[in-house]
View: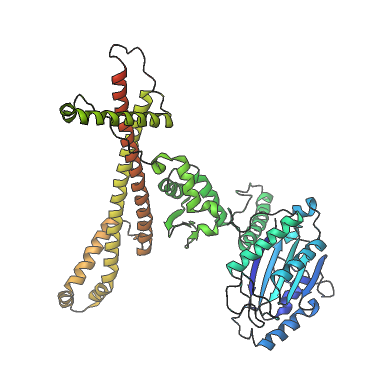
Length: 515
């Protein structure tokens, strides 16, 4: 599969890009590798082409273009854009991809994607850390040298005019990825959908951190083994990967967000909250939360909630059937007084009996015992869900009180500090009675609530409140569904009783009738 990576550079020295692509560099330090005569070593195998420029004088021509259009003069401006197309390692062995072919394909692609720009196209065959995957670098000057026809992906004014700068927008990147996918499919190379978000998103920075951490761990383990001991770990994991592993483990054993949230914290001390339609995770060794977007789609709210639903679909997805009870004509006074009304009731009863039988068949209840058992279980789940909601509301009330008194405490703390420093405390208290009383009330309450003295910040409390409020909303939705389910099962149970009462003689009770 070919993937694309984009790097923006504010480095005004275009020679650095040229040297990196042409000569060997140490991947851990980024320094150029020199021979015994202090001369840079050229890469073993590379293919170089220039677009709207000579590759050997790429740096000089970029300077001249910038000066001509009076662009890229400030330090903050983006001077160049670096795109890397990495091909699947299997393309080399299974599809016959060579460095020369990859260069030809990438050059044609660059002509289509970057018309009017000065670009350096360089293909390497060594791969990162000697992995051997073929990849192509396309480095363009950010200033367009020649005017071109306006393209559909251009959403900024004057992008097609000479002298205007390249914009690597989402629209452009999607266009670029689409062209790469089409190219690989046409050439019979391995390819995945680049336009869909990755299920597991691993950035270049995380990849490099993983490699560096693994190398350090192996060096440490060698010393431990040399001392005759056994290392505790042999595989290094980034904090993001630790989060992914913990999420996979806990989500597989959870039927709701509440269970997932509790299990994740109890087992791994990882906090998760739902905020603005996304899950945000806090690793125990971090101060800042990591969003689901940084981990991949299978660690996000949408994917995980679908996973929870598949485990417990009844409480969430049940749709009310609006069944009605069969009317007992022998006990209905109005039916006994009016033959016309009794006739309408009979017709309605027949319709409800038919609907009841359809319901029983659709839900697979074979005996009356199964039906009663389902009704009993639904009622039990409803009672449990209602109790849980009461506990959540109590927790919410507690958090609101914490927020109230914490805010009151900090709002009056400055006044109370002045009071402690005042020479005439009696006079100061008289002048600021309300503020001091408010502070002391909040202080005393917080002391009783936090006996260890470790208060939570307003920010943390508000995050907990937002998360708890979302859980309460989900619980209310579950309770509504359970109420509908329980009501329907109660109605079906009573209707079945009425049907069987009319059909089965009282003496005939040798076995339970099938529904």
